[in-house]
Image 1 (cartoon, one colour):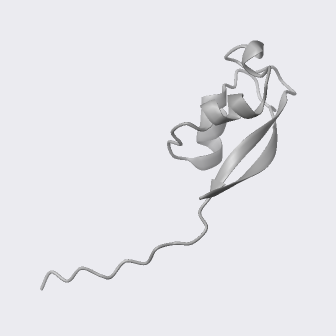
Image 2 (cartoon, rainbow, N blue to C red; image 1 turned 60 degrees about the vertical axis):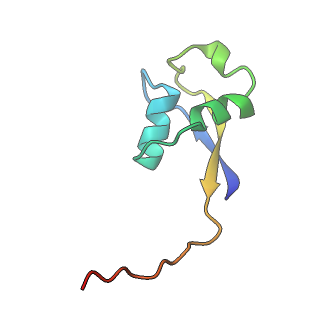
Length: 75
């Protein structure tokens, strides 16, 4: 799995990193909040609720190829 980055600007009030990740992917992304904090030194110093207008880089995992499985036949 490779990774690209997206530039994200906080455009709403009372947003946390976990809410931003949820709104972007609509599913749990284990370890992504930590990866964002690692990629953006000083972001954690802003506190859990990010100020309006904060800009940061979000690493986005990208699957290279999809594995196709053989169908399972029950009958």
